[in-house]
Image (tube, rainbow over all chains, first blue to last red; front, side, top):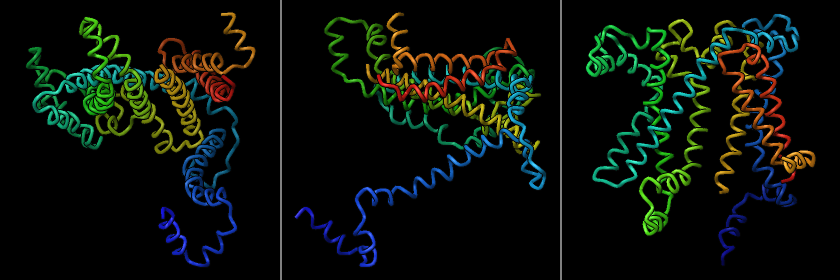
Length: 315
Length: 62
């Protein structure tokens, strides 16, 4: 009786198809089903990666396809790793990465902790907090440009109101010292809700009985927070840091829209610099080497992180 | 420490992954630090060595 639908399906299979697959083993049929996905993966991910590594050893320029391509060995890598400009770009990326992670994790966890306490309208608040994350980075970049306007910007007005400074006396986007903070604030505003959602999932997964047992043992709220909440939410926090860390290492759209990498090169992150090398200066071989360096860095970091995450989950 | 070195010599996964992770972390710190250019220059090689070591050591027995 339970095999009836399968038999019906088997009977519905067109006779030529049935004849063709009848001699195949289950393993072979499984391979037939999986093959398109594997082919797509190879064509879209693996082949371009191998091709990029190959190009990184050449002086290929994609805008001059008829020019002879010379094999330059490790010269592209040597030039990148002794370039002051790229070193400065790495430092700008590190500044952006560290501060966005710190702020997003602190604020995201605090928000999750507050939202987790059920109160009237908490669902509405959750929806309102999550809204920035649903917007396009281009839109966010555009309206933060308006918020940062020295003459009419709400951000400058708020800072002026709080500190007594003249709102027109400073420009978040135009000032060399403030521009890196302008992109950090915008990214934190946009992506803190994402960290909050992950932390909220972690907090909601902690069984209430553990807190009840701690109450019976007369553990203070502070002690419960450090010995129950933080250790049990830690895998989720680490996951959030992993996702945001990798995403922010590749950050492009929001920063391009907001500052375009300026003033000067103060907010030129690695992905922006890479795009300029590849599609403005058309140094394809050089930019391939640059991309390989970034790939190895992200891959290495992700490996450590996944290992740490598994360790925390095992505890 | 002795146990760590013994496991390292017996090609055990744990200590080798630890060494690889340390190399990767060192490489990334060298890549992004703002003080010494020579560290920046060698950072990629250190990160690459750590990453390759991590991939290989993840196939070692526990």
